[in-house]
Image 1 (cartoon, helix red, strand yellow):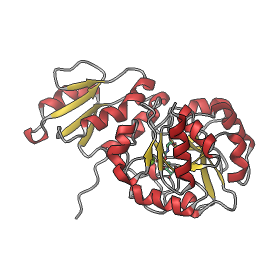
Image 2 (cartoon, helix red, strand yellow):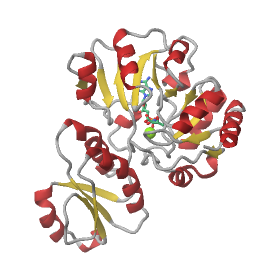
Image 3 (cartoon, helix red, strand yellow):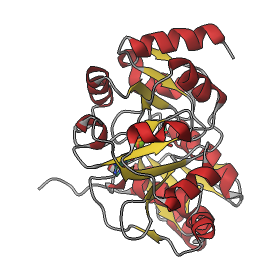
Length: 318
Ligand code: TXA
Ligand code: MG
């Protein structure tokens, strides 16, 4: 790791600038969480609506009391089990927390990332970092530094290079402020794992609400039209494709007699590759991206969720 780059990044953050950095999930667009002017820049750089809350990244759980009003036992249990790691907890916010972070709500999303560079940056900087994914609003999250440059260009003051993100999908978000814990966004830490730690069933919130920007239906989306097709129907679907849908590419598990990317059978590897593969297929060379449907089991929840959002086609304006 390049210590000098980390020092430089921390200095920029202290001066209210934006620094993109790798985490184990996706690259984040970081700003000093206690500097409202720096927070404003995040919204501008991403083109993101102002009422969308931002996750605050901490170096460890010892910083929690500075940002939240209370730490319920269940939240402490999840933090102990999964931090550092790809889990975001929604808790009641401490009174000083800026509306730009919370979207004007009385809750805050917090997480402790597990990545050497994210950790070094947080420790050198000393404070907390507000960081949404480092993409333009509504687009696929970046899992490489090159993808951050592609998304944000000169809108970001510095990008820390950290290779390809290990997890590859955004963190699991669990709301701990209701009567029962609820998953607002599935991630690679599954509802089954969370239920096992808390010894209770965990609901996944189905309805869409702007509380979680990723819960808007069309999100994490490529520009190219994308369709999810069940394995049994792929051959027929390909045969019936009109010529204006060509050329196309298929992301599938099995070998097909068609242009394709073979996707891994394991959810861990699939998640790791997905955004990179989608981004590569979304350079304008194809008219359509066809994705073989993934299994209907909890360990595929996060992948299924992101694929469905990416394939959502907004209704034509009247
Ligand atoms: O893995 C991740 O979580 C990545 C890395 C960079 O840490 N970050 C990320 O941030 O995905 P972003 O902003 O792209 O998505 C964060 C989600 C948003 O959908 C936001 O609405 C939700 O977290 N969120 C943040 N604070 C919240 C709150 N107080 N209540 C409900 N949802 C919240
Ligand atoms: Mg995002």
